[in-house]
Amino acid sequence: MTVKEDIKSISRVLTFWDKLTDAQQNLILDRIVTEKYQKGSTIHSGDMDCIGVLLIKKGEVRIYILSDEGKEITLYRLGEGEVCILSASCILDNITFDVHIDAETDSEVLVIDSNVYKQICRQNIYAESFTDKLVIDRFSDVMWAMEQILFMSFDKRLAIFLFDEITRNQTDMIDLTHEQIAKYVGSAREVVSRMLKYFANEGIVELSRGGVKVINKKKLKSLTL
Amino acid sequence: MTVKEDIKSISRVLTFWDKLTDAQQNLILDRIVTEKYQKGSTIHSGDMDCIGVLLIKKGEVRIYILSDEGKEITLYRLGEGEVCILSASCILDNITFDVHIDAETDSEVLVIDSNVYKQICRQNIYAESFTDKLVIDRFSDVMWAMEQILFMSFDKRLAIFLFDEITRNQTDMIDLTHEQIAKYVGSAREVVSRMLKYFANEGIVELSRGGVKVINKKKLKSLTL
Image 1 (cartoon, each protein chain N blue to C red):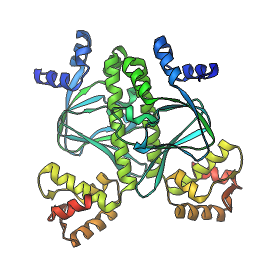
Image 2: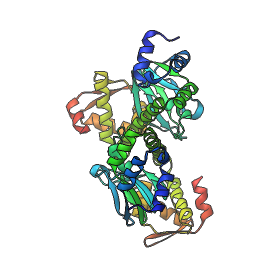
Image 3: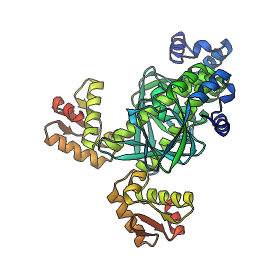
Image 4: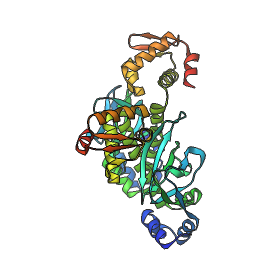
């Protein structure tokens, strides 16, 4: 199943690769599978599954928490070449919470089976240490998100989101509904719509059906500072 | 400086103790100091210091984040026999955020100097792994707090706080101002006062200067479910 190119990227991303025995390397390579996810589809949902460790080949995934009432809070996103570890939270002893993971764009990921990964971590201290440090990186991401959500004024938060979007996609057009933007910034649709209308009145954006166009990047930027 | 009793508790709490060389153990014992903190005093404030790893002998400490505007969000608390690692965040490579730590009650802690601790972690993989797992435990605590704050209705959140307080202190009286309660539950004083007034009208609590008395524990409990 695994092509040469995949093996190369696996060994580059999993920094403990060279510390594994041949048998351990082969175990991973035998059990790794490539999965494709369409934009918007669910990759992992809370404690419903424990899909495994994801190596993102193409695309972007969003990791978020979901309340009983359906409210979403985005924790962080991961892109090409990054490893998603919380999709295997069931094998992480000290992780007692669950997250949801969606494909943000059409994505292709290599999936290492949870049980195989757990076995490797038990056998190899470098794999275990790599995993722990990956989780701790995500802890820092979550703290950042938490500070944004709890401390930052909403105009600044929304401005940062819009500015990041146009920078990342290299276009002034943001093809997202107010509902979708609300999910990303962890707010309600009404709150987003109100603030976007304010931004439009200020000449920062132009609103259209299903999209937002940034028309004054400089002014938007100044709101993010 | 270190008495026999302290060495016992150090070796019990730091589960990697037996894996250290005599020289490493002595390095820690030589450099460990006992500090006493009065109720309400600051132990660690953001990136202003990097006091070291704390072993709590007596009392309770509160770990929180603080906005530029002075808003506090409590992340978790640690008590007797627990280890506080984020007070040494400067030595943790993958931690990019800062927290504040206060003594909740009169407290006595053993402090292991940051540099000594870092040196031990570099030399000993068990110490490093212990540290990583401790941080990951706190990640789970923070996610719990985040879900409480972001998802839970405020009446439930406040009821849980009050119920935990009277259970923990084994008294129906909560000697905290609305301002203090607001800090603990990550809200504003006005919001707390309004909800406490509602609870009082419902016959759940009685309000007095600088305190809240729970008069209907059963009703309070039902709000927490």
